[in-house]
Structure formats: structure tokens, C-alpha cells
Image 1 (cartoon, rainbow, N blue to C red):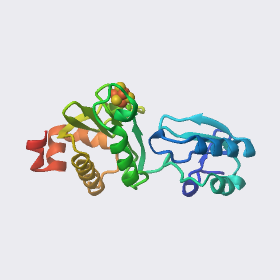
Image 2: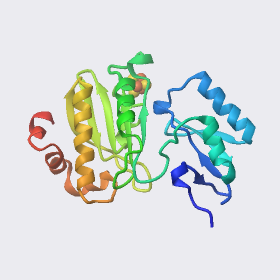
Image 3: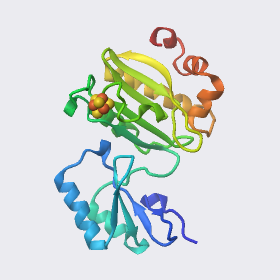
Length: 226
Ligand code: SF4
């Protein structure tokens, strides 16, 4: 029986015969040249396309024997759509485009994507970065959500959708400094890797309570940062 081919980013589809693949498009930011290339490959191999909630373009109907040739022609890395890792970092347009933005979500989000996308973890983990509190990147239902505020960034933790949806808790408010946000994200992921727990991070926050989780992850910083 066929299975997902994780090392090739190929996900078995409902017909149990063909696969879907999704090139990595950080933050959904792309170019006309990349889109033309994806369309040309889709036409050549008779693939269907769908935009995904992770800001990617999924290609469906991929035959197993054509997976390698298709990736070669795309010349793109697979998006981490499956597996126990950092899956996606959803990024809103922020101050690059949006008139309501108060923070540069694209700059921060792309830095996070470059560091963390596909990083192995005890369970799947999604992140989001929004340039203001309207939260178009849905940061309240991300395992780690970063929300721009007029004073800086709000870091949320423990959100997820799925069968037991959970709104994230406020972990910390930081000054408007990408380095400070990245340092906290690093601390969360370090702690998660060392926790020995294989559940979604929201389950851990639920069990511990956000105060205890904050103390465990941030230690002495917690009092001054929260
Ligand atoms: S979250 Fe705010 S900055 Fe980002 S797209 Fe929505 S309104 Fe614009």
C-alpha cells in the first residue's frame, strides 16, 4: 500500500495513487516568474493547483514516477506540509503593504522562516506573524503567534485549530525589536525540544497554566517581560 513519501514532500491523496506536493513559498511572497514556472510544470504534468492556508500552492495529481522530475523542474524546496517539525510561518503584509500595520511582519516573519521552517520538533508546530492586532495571520490559533502592537510585539503561545481548537495565551510583550522576539521564540523551542513531551505545545500550556509555563521557559526574564 502506498504511503506519504516524506523525504520528497509528497503526500498521498484520496485516490491512494497520486500525490500532492507544495513548493516552499516563504510567507506566500512570490514573483511572476516563479508563478509562471509553477504553472508551466502544472501544465506539462497535468497537475491541479490549490492555494493553501499555509500560503503555498499545492500541486495535485502527481504520479510517483514523476515526483523527482517535477521537483527538478520546479527548482524549489518542498514546504514542510507534513511531519513533526515547524510546518509553516504565516505572514501578513505588515508595513510593507498594509495601511493599518504598525510593525514589519514580513521582515520578522521571513527571518523566522529562514531559521525555523522544517526544523524537527516533538510535534507539529505552526507560527504566524501579524503586523497589527487585527491579526490577519491568525496568530491566536498558532502554536507560536507574534502580533504587532503600537508598542512592539506581543508573543502568544499554545494556540491551535484542529479537533480541540485552543486560543493561544499571552506569553510576553516585548519592545519593537526583532532580536528580542527571536530570542523568546528560540527559548520556547529550546524548552519544547528538551521537555520530553510529544504533544502540541498548547496541551503543555493547558496542563501547566500560562504562569508556570512562562516561568519555566523564560525564567527570571518572565517577571520583567510579561
Ligand atoms: S494584521 Fe494588520 S497589518 Fe497585517 S494585514 Fe491585517 S490589518 Fe494589515
